Image 1 (cartoon, rainbow, N blue to C red):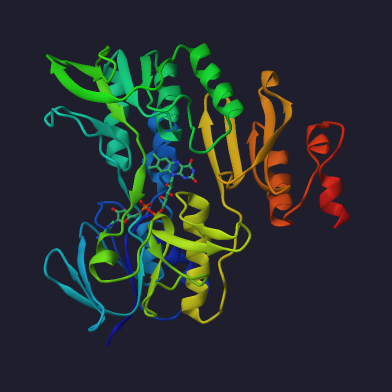
Image 2: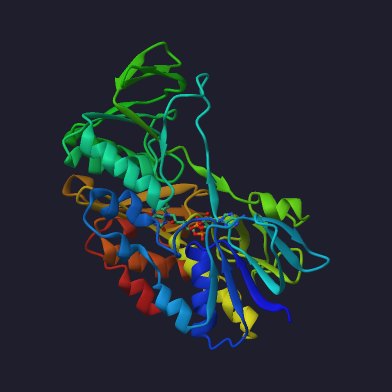
Length: 406
Ligand code: FAD
């Protein structure tokens, strides 16, 4: 007898697909296969509370082994799926075991971008797994200086924790500002100042040419010839979708595995979910590949419904968050294609928002220490609201009025 649902990748999206299937009373057999040594877990805390040592490992897990046993979800850990035979509807594991499926879900997540240096032997730290976070936490405990390559969310979150451990932090970034891919210059400036006020040093417009070991120390050689000496180096320069399996089995891929609004790939028996997938979104009138918990969870629920026979298209407003010091950044929507942006509130009060518009339509909101504005922003994006910039700037005007007037 064939396995009903087989899920490749026991991360957030794969785990949530299995859990959502059972929550939706799906009766068929479910097998979840992951190449890590852990039950499905949440990664955000790996660069936040878990790295800081403020929460225990058990808080990271989506569910316990007991839950999976009770719900009859068969989990195979520590095994990589090495190929998919779409004609025979089987997958092959790294121990040569074959598993057949009726429906296959690919939830292989992302792979880290690796720093290219001339010297390949030097030890660098990356952050993706529980093991990586534990190693970096240990380094933070035993060293005085850290250099971080990349001023994205992960690099900045690690910096904010390193500073609280009294470690000297230098961040090297090839762009001219922090988080330049995702936020406006004003938000970058705000975060840069916050970090600098805590003692972080930045080197912008800087590429790493090479990293050498000098005894126990590392020397980073930059493109302008300058050097940074440090105790250890963490690299956070982004990720790319993990599409190798899908590509090798002939599924359509283009910046992720191409899926339709129901999560189907170019093969009707195969779905893709989470970081590795690229889906259409009507609200943004474009395809999106997202790297977020919201996407992993919501898309998993939608795919589970579709497998369980309740047609549920996936059309959600993406959202994301980052915690640095006492600052919570919450982002609703995708600002990538905006043609104007307006600031609401005062950055100096550490509580403000940025509203991004395209053709007058609101497409994204960055809220800094302002969860209420984030929630309103999400609703307004969903409504595809057109809001005059003067109203956005006017702090006496409650945006709720627009929401309740519709
Ligand atoms: P993953 O969780 O990466 O799971 C994929 C799994 O598949 C992995 O376990 C992988 O080992 C396994 N796998 C891959 N190939 C195979 C194979 N061939 N066979 C078997 N198994 C395989 N998002 C937010 O929204 N907010 C945050 O604040 C935030 N912070 C983050 C901090 C860190 C340090 C990291 C790493 C990520 C963060 N994210 C955050 C992103 C979020 O965690 C991801 O978007 C989410 O985990 C995606 O889920 P996924 O299941 O698609 O991928």
